[in-house]
Image 1 (tube, rainbow, N blue to C red):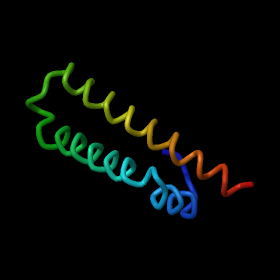
Image 2: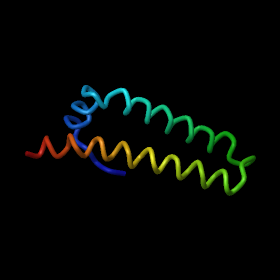
Image 3: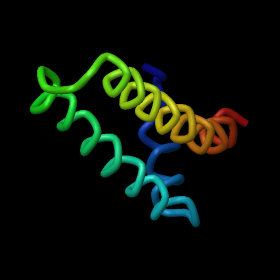
Image 4: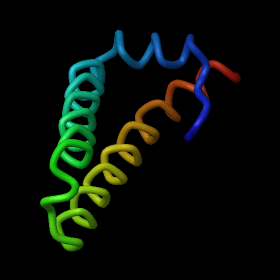
Length: 74
């Protein structure tokens, strides 16, 4: 997990990226919930796909937050 300052997160959420960050959070929570609740009924392929989607969401989130973290440091 990446560590971002509260200020960078606040700045990102209150920027033009805020709606996308909220959407990423919702999608991530939905996918994680599915893994937890339905994990035993899912195939290995489905589990791998869900985890890959979560990883992609994390990467996108981190790319957005990194822009603001760099601004905080300078």
